[in-house]
Image (cartoon, rainbow over all chains, first blue to last red):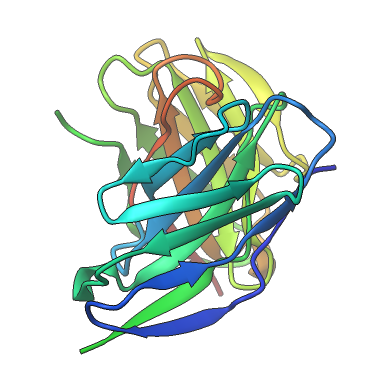
Length: 113
Length: 115
């Protein structure tokens, strides 16, 4: 069975600094997608970034980028120039042939002004 | 365009009662998935509906059921509520079945409290 592990329950970063959230996953599938979702206090899950496993190039969305290490089954999220609005719960997630999203337990990110 | 709408936002029910939650997907989206979010178990997949048919199901007891209507709106029902059913229930919609090649859009959830 596929699993997603986020080893950092909470993290803090100074505003304007860079922070990296860690995620590892386990799967035997060759074709899959990885995601980072953000859940602010409003509770709505918002897609931050998506990575297709067959693409070697790391995905980037503005201040958000990933470091996808397929062999190591690692998928970390880097947030550059952190802003107060980035404070939220971040979930690493996986989907494969089963077509359901498997989420990690989440990392709560605090932004310090 | 309007996002995914879940109603009600909050519910308080008593043990043994049943509850129905509603999810209206984004216009044009035909697939609706449901997830349960609790502090202990995190986010867990309940089921997915596409074109009024249950396409995929998670590992939940039969007390949890759902359906989808011809307009793609979906309802999930929980019967004989237990305290452990207290959770945030999230709905996600996608244009077509599955999420491998598309983006899932989530609603703001329904917070269910069982007392």
